[in-house]
Image (cartoon, rainbow, N blue to C red; front, top):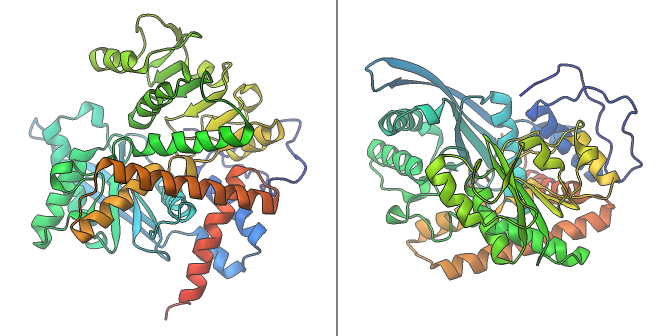
Length: 440
Ligand code: GLU
């Protein structure tokens, strides 16, 4: 990911007349600075006190750990990892752990702050955190991954716990990763605390519905937006960039609603068919071939072209900063539904808002995952087991309510969806901070 040192134009409150320069400045793609710009905009609308702004835009704790890991060939590799707790004003810190070769501390800080706003936007009693290990999980064996995960868990252990900070899966981590983390915590502390992580396997306190949660939440948000805009989801054309858990499940759920999946992609490239792609066939093909590229009945399309192709709904479900100043003008979708965290840059946001494209923001659109994480934590703490029906009904209620609260905020401040969701979320965290007062 390229970063440019040059400062970006400060973001104006969305809703004011557009101010995109004719000669495009080089965009600042630093994820943490982008996160702070988005926060500053909401803080400005809420007229927050400067001291409070400083507190809310800065992580509470940043932990960097080294993770010596024995590889299968007997050699020891020193890997680096992070856990950032951005804010705990509304409850224990909450957020995923990702394993990826390109992780930076600024990215983890940005994602931790996004978790603070996400949990506040859907009004669940958590703060925000994120973790990551710089590694290439695709080139590691299962036993190497287990040793690395256990050592990472052990290094961050003094800072995590059911009332402190609760990790969950994210990019290239899954239920098995969480099982190793929970076991490391239990063996070290002597407590069988299921609630220390979420996204666990069902056999050790995982929740029904957690694998589909992110995609399910996304579909609820898109459905509500379509109702509002009088767009029919039946027959709507959808392009999805990224075929991981969120992207692949969203494709299946949209197809169940009779929408038409016209393009899909993964890291190796994409496939397209204007008559529609069967997501189940794509899934099975990818299981065998390791990619959707080459699947029968669809032609090839690049990840870049997928973003700008003709469709009604575009779902970025891969990495951050894919919709930028470079391609925002060429986006043809009417709705962009952010399944991944931070796919749209602030400049792109501004261009899309001016062009009337609705950007459904990550902090609401992909909040289904953390919402079901919350349900898992509640079940663990109370020794309850809810069935899938109960989880999906509660998820729908939480997401739909949050969507309408966002719309109310948009109307009140005359702003697009991201600003609406941010103002709603920042206001909740600010209120919690103020009522608690400053320690000591
Ligand atoms: N990794 C997911 C996210 O970014 C879920 C986090 C969680 O459940 O704590 O929202």
